[in-house]
Length: 201
Image (cartoon, rainbow, N blue to C red; front, side):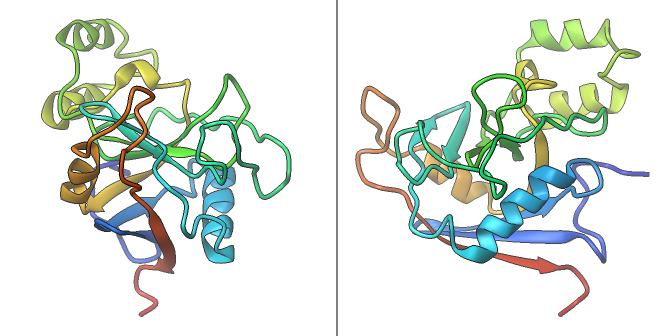
């Protein structure tokens, strides 16, 4: 049985995001979001993300990067056109989720975010409990209660990975001083992203 918060299993694809504040290790979900994972891993291997900044950081919400312009307005997919959303009942915007940023339905490019919120609004948990048979299984609700997250982004942003080591680094990035546009005063950079398959080492 698939569980989003499980540690990586043999055969899982792993991304290690090396930032100037530390490393973030992420399990990728190619079985549920194949296009998003292919896009991210290909960009990572090609060095597309090397040196890019986290251009939008909102404490108790998320950290966003992947834009070569560093403005939130740039970035292309590996296919040079937007690609479709990929939603699955098994994947939700829990704390630590790696998700695609977008400008509306089916507009995925290169930008992504990591959810940093460590709680979920009680009102939304109550709403999800009324939708337990309609996209929000009990396990998902229990996970939101346990670790937090941003349930209002579910089925709007493709979840394609989950941090399993380095949430302290995500929290450290979320703590940096930002300007009025939520851009860090001092650059927080992705130095490189290493892709591997667990069990191949």
